Image 1 (cartoon, rainbow, N blue to C red):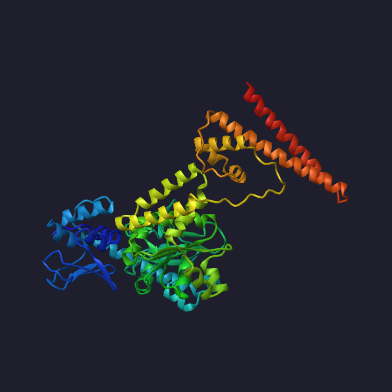
Image 2 (image 1 turned 90 degrees about the vertical axis):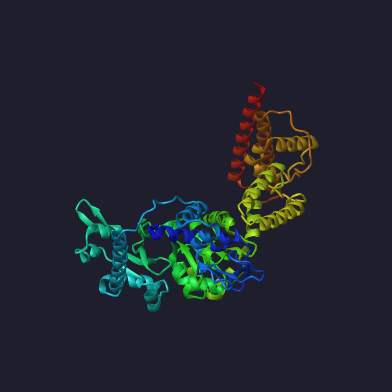
Length: 541
């Protein structure tokens, strides 16, 4: 019988959750490690239909039906293999391949691929402990790697010469290039990895599908990875997953860090459920693979801006995979450090504290919204609510979606609409703003949200509550913005004048006189007045 390429059916099994597919037909309840429900293939009142998400199969202890995601679709929909594949492909959002028999040549090519990558790994491993790889061995041991760790992860060294091209000279060149280890240049074949510390990349079955090479001389990029091949796709490959799979099941969660060394160190020091994306940003495919093993995830990122952005992106990616029993959290390593440094310098207990104090997704998303939107203004709240609504809509479990929505509605009522902005305390006391000016500013803020966003820092500093409903301003957008700018300039000039007067007063009281500071203040006052005059001239024209 003709069949699809194994890589495609494997991709379907990888991307789609068996529990999600079966839940479309019957209600499942998690008990222990499995999900249970009433069998759709025979009548029963007591659930005897078991679904094992991790292993990817179902079994009915009543009628004996047994199979995987494809056979369930065929039997439950009463359709053939081809139709089942098409339905699952549509569900997964991936394009159907041509329906064809897998040829002997394809099977042989896959076997050759794995034979080459396995032998290359052995070569790299041997070289690491020879004189030629001495500096690489010294580097990895200085990073805290023991011989046992090096052996377990099969770390090696690729020398500067073309050793793979030379050692495999009896292999057809197209077979070598298919693995990404060798490329063809103007002067013939050459090794892609040279003078690199080599990390083999395993698929979920423990086969070596690619490599990641780290530079040893400080050059950038630090890591280069095998380019995508027939059997390796970075967007669908998770580093360390083959080692972490059992621990993810046992510990009922996965931990995602940013780099390979971080993942290895975490796995070897008390967090065996840790993995990392490979050579690319976290993808939906990565999340789908992990959620098939377990929907509880802790994302562990650096605490800098890049780490915060990565966390927000991860949050939006994981939302469609959430279920009511999911526990997704976000942990941050601050101080310019990473998990590797924390483990080496402070130990497992410090890292465990970071993981244990991770912020739940619902709180992380709420905090992110409050940081990135001016929620003490109507316009800011409107934008924030639209963003939250868009995020919540990604959750596919409708009951859980409604619960999240109700939680955020409660927070919006209790926090946004009773917002008390921290009192603004300028360095120099400025005159109070008159009521007419306050009302005009409120009117501009409520009429033109775009102006609000543009001058958010200044408007916040005025310590005005913008929650009161006022009549919309009659000013057009251009003149409304001119008013805000001119008022900002006036306040700025007032502040400078007050600082100048305070400086002169201090000098009269016998304190040290700073002539340079006075000169600087005079220049700033002059420049501010000049800008204000120009703006007033524009208004009069």
